[in-house]
Every structure is written in C-alpha cells, then in structure tokens.
Image (cartoon, rainbow, N blue to C red):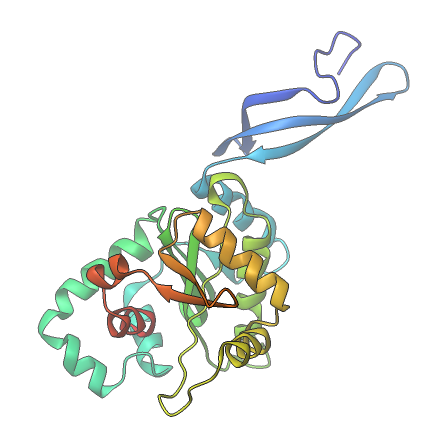
Length: 265
C-alpha cells in the first residue's frame, strides 16, 4: 500500500470480503491493528477479524485447519451410507434403539441428511475421514441462542491415528474462537443415581470434579446462564442455601428423559 492508504490503526471495517483462489468468498467485520512502512515505498497493514456469520467462520476454520490435518472436516457433506455405517459400528445405534426408531426411520434419515448435507446454522459436525469413510465424529447443536450442546462423540481404529482426540481437539479450537452473537456456553448433563441424595455442598463438589471448575466459577456460570434467559430457577432457602432447579416452562416443552434420549440419538 502507498502513502495514500486510508487504512489507519484502530479503524473498523464494517464489511470486508476475504477471497480464496477466486472461489471461496467470506464476509466479515474487521479492524486495522497496525500499519508498517516497508522501504519507504509501501505500507503493510495487519487486520483482525471481529465478527462473521457462523457458516463463514466454519468455512474459514476448515481452510486453516485443513493445512494441519487434511483428513479433518467441519460440516462437510458426509456420505450418508458411510455415516450410518459408522453409527452402527461404534454402537450409537444398537438393537434396542433401532427398534424404537424403526417405524420412523425414513424421517430420521431425512433429518440427518439435512443436518449433514445442507449445513444449517443450528448444527455443526466435525469428522475425521479417509477415502469417504468416517473414523471420528463429534457434533453440536444450538440448544439456545448462545448455547451449544455437544453430542455424538465417537471414534474407531484407523491404523495408528487417534481419531477421537483429533476431532475433540478440532471442536475445542473451533469453540475457543467463537465470538459475538455466537458466543457459546458448553452444556453438560450430570445424571446421578437415585440412591444418592447429596447435600448442596456435595452437589457443588461433584460439579467441580465433573466439570473441572471452581465453586466461584460455577456460581458465575449459573448467574450468566440465568441472565441469558436459560430456564433455571434460583431460590434462597433460610437465607443460607441456594437451590437451583429447572424451570417448569422447560419441563412443559420436553421431559428430562426426552432431553437425555436426544443426547444419545
């Protein structure tokens, strides 16, 4: 760039288009971070991406990550026969589950076709594939406006490749860079045996160990979830203990068993 460049540090560009090989075009919002003079004849500017839509972000991440791991994919078109074979082989679809969905299997197949071939904004999948065969898989679905629920994490042997760790690392890197209206809360469902009746302190300890969080972090996360409209009721008992419960409004929409079954499908 010459001295007449209008790009100055701090300047925000509301609409910028990134073009790869004249084919892939990604729109985003960016900001100029620095401007350096080179040989007194031109300037080099550095820009940072501030925001982009979820599908553009997925395509950009795919391009960048593919240089590191060529067999790792984000929301690509998966061969459905290969996907169903993977689900059966890894135990996601076992005889009892198959009997439950058999009467509506065509509806299930059509739903999964849309999820894995039409790249909707409410769902993303991460796979490790070679020659069209799926060896590792994890997916996530948008449960709320800013909450993503991860599911269907499985892998199978492929030579000496740890495909399960690869797709897990892939989705973690993806989530760590998610920003703006796509800012995420990872959801974890903790199901305790009915015989266990832990106190509030014990419950907090269990959550700390299960989610690897401090007590203060758990409180902060709960506060943020409530602020964002997640249906959690918070009540104080005897001005001492805090009781958390799922709002009856959510129970009217779907039972816990239904939610747990959706996690396993």
